[in-house]
Length: 162
Image (tube, rainbow, N blue to C red; front, side):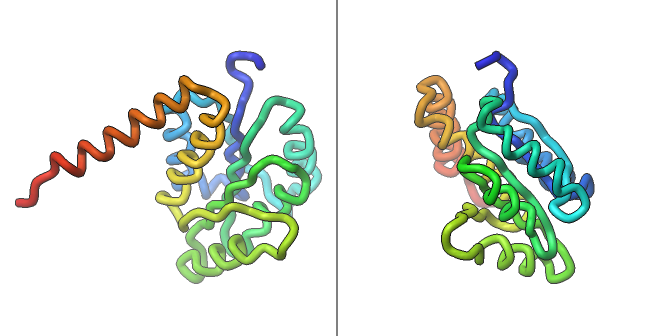
């Protein structure tokens, strides 16, 4: 694998999702995971989505994070075109993201999408889950993930109330 070849694709249905999905990118950056961020729509650019996703595995990608609001079809469309793990991040929308959450989590049996929380927490956790998936085959990344977890533990143990 080339040094900067993306291992993760962070895909969103619209550039307006970047305010949230940048947290996935920042988290992947923190762990040094090469990734690509793209805005493509399941409805407006279906051929481009299919091309990106169907060639991803052959290009070294191991995980796809897909974010979408409303009907949230992007994650399902992505999952339909790859055997790679697809992690769905529902975006806040008309119903405060509940519609997006239900559309993503209620995928019919047979084509799974791992679904995270709505918004920033979901974007961050999707990236952390992608790191955990990659760390299964990468001892250096596993060490970074272990150190991150230990840092979180220490922050909680060292916190004080006013």
